[in-house]
Structure formats: structure tokens, C-alpha cells
Image (cartoon, rainbow, N blue to C red):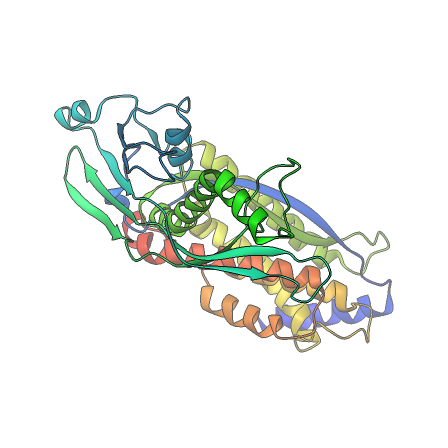
Length: 386
């Protein structure tokens, strides 16, 4: 390693006397399997039972619906959109729930019940008190009871999710500001000149308002729950895009950066080819770890040469180029399972005066690092990832 660093130091010193570094991004893309934290409870199919209580001044009648559902029914389509389906990996069953159980076909049964919207603490206000033209509006404290359970059924029968949100988050919403009513002449989005006009509009548009507000509450309640469910229980394929930075200076001096970027790109391409052959998460195997570590050695050597300072412009590798090399380095730390070091570096640089685009890239890499770290911890032993 000492010889490698010495060689690099000589090469890098020569580079400083040559042309200025000109980073260029190389786009890489690969497919991979996104593994769950509990793969034994993953199931390809889901079924949905919806119990919707009478709501919104009778605009929604009481109903109970069971999978297989279609998007023809507006209310069924709304609830189906909340479930994080993944083509061929997690899709709604085309069979009846009873048939799946009889055949012991693994599936997840979501049972969702929603109640009527609750409008409390109605207050009428004037947005511009004392102004020549008043703007009256109403405010409400709004809730909607929701209950969701998920049970893994078929070959086994295990409750995996049970949440009763009768005391769901309380929203403070305004009429007419916080609702989309269209462009009719009697719709005044900023408020009404008299209380009488406000009340008349409320009587006319109350059902439409309640429908929008209720669906908003339901969607915002279910979104984080289903995100966590997907992360914990659903295994599926996804494309990942990444970018590695090389140097476009054609007069030499940065061959080590060009070669490291090319090795990284070639490794990603090989990983993608392995995926097509059914070998998932191949970047954890030793052959690819070795190649990534060769890239790391080059990028680390550059960063160490200016003590990991990526904000200065005092030599041929300016702040922009330094930050590109830093992104290469952190991204490759993630691919070589050095999750803690990657996170520490990202936290450190996010607190510095870096370029906005670098800030955004680091935030993106933080999310990837969190995902890969979580998957590795849950599955490394199971899948013999080195």
C-alpha cells in the first residue's frame, strides 16, 4: 500500500503541473433485487377488503368490497392506488380470497375500514379585517377514522400489521382555500365578501369539500404505513441509476481518474449482466468487491492529497472536481459495505459550504446507504453475501 501511495503521489504531483481537471459524468444503470427485512413473510399476491361507512353527507354509501377489484368503480380505484403494487412481484390477486386460502396460495390480505369525516370547531373568519373588501372563510378541525390490518395467509396465517387510527391526525382546514372546486362564478378561492355568500357556498359545495378532505386524510395516513410495509415485506426488482465521474482532459495527467471510473463502470455492467442470469446482489461477491476497492484506492489517494478538503480552489483540482471525486468515493464505500464510514462522511460534508448539486447528490446517496445497510444487515447471512 505504501508503494501504491508513493506512486500515486508522484502521478498526482505531475498532474498539478499539467492541465486542470475537467470532471465528466458517466451514467451507469443496473437492475437489482430489493430485498425485504422479513423475506419469509413476502407474498406475490395481495387481496383487499374495503368496508366504507356512509360518509360525506351521503355522497359515499355504505359498502363492502372484496378482491379481485377493478378500477371501474371509482372508490375501489382510489383505495387500490394506495397499495404499493409492483408488476410481477406484488400484484392484486385475480382469484377469490376463499379460493386462495383453500389452495394455500401465499397472499397478503389487507382489510381496510374507513368512517365518516368529522368536522369540529367550526369558526368563521375574515381574512382581511377592516379592509374595504372582506374575505370570509371557515376553518375546521378535521379527522377521519381509519383502520387497516394486513394478514399473511394461504400457507401460513400471520397478522403482520394492525393499526387503528380512530384518533388519527387532526387537520386544520379552511373553506374555500383548502379545496379544489373548479372555476364556476360563485367559487371564490380566497374567501367571500359576506358571511351569507360564504354559507351559501358551503351548503352547495360541502359534499365535494368533504370528499376531498376525507380522501386527503386517508391517503396521507396510508402512505407512510404502506412505505414501511413495502420495505419490510415486499421483495421486488428495481432499476438503480448511478453516475461515476471521470476526467475529459485529453492531454493526460489524470489517467488514474479515467481508469478508476472505467473500472467502476465495467463492474456495474458486469453486475447487471449477472442479474440477468439470476445472480442477485452480486456486488457483495469478492470479485466485485476487489474491483470496487481498486477504485476506492485511487479516489481516496486524491482526497488525501488535499486532506479531504473539497471546498478550496488552490490547485489544478478545484472544488467542483474535488466534490465529484468525493461523490465517487462515498458511492463506492456504499457498494463495499462500508455503510458507517459513508454516513459519517456525508453528515460531515452536508454541514459544509458545498455546491447545491453536491448537497442533493449526498442526500440521494444517504437514502441509498440507508437502504443497502438495512438490507445487508437483514439478509447477509441468509444469502451468504461476503
